[in-house]
Image (tube, rainbow, N blue to C red; front, side, top):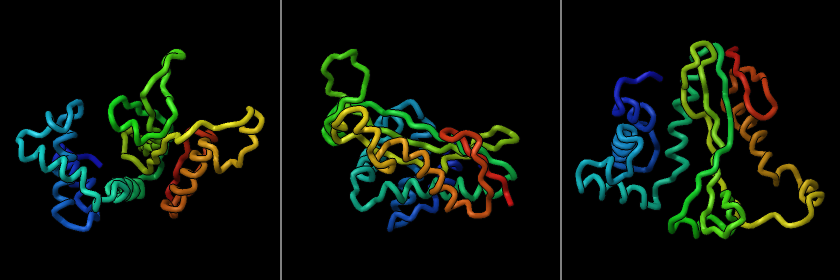
Length: 205
């Protein structure tokens, strides 16, 4: 999915997002373009006018806009690009995003950051992402899947009791669930597991 500018990229990825109103879709593409052009900046710094800043925050706070619909727009574009390639690697991993400001109150009661045993008010949002890569050129195609969660409370019980929990209740189950979700979408591909927890391969059939 090669594009020359951030505007072209944003339009390609988000131009067909189903947000219930075409004006919201246009605003999403504009916001994504500004953020891509200024990837290391905040929304305020990435938006070059007060009007664009206000419009960006109105968009973010609009409860009628589904975050999943935004994500699905990107996943859909990646899936279509994958279909054009003979061999694709889908590499998945989990990362933790640690927050210190007011959003922490919405991220459960578990402190997941390393504070060397000291009390901390930080909280972690986990993101499990699957990135599609062209196996021949090693170029990044895009995200195929992404799942977020946070730990609402600590898992109680002894180590043995925790290990006896149903597999579907464990965070490690997300790896298998991702494989199944992608397989359901990429129905025209044979899927080869090259690592049980890290990488799968699509072969176009």
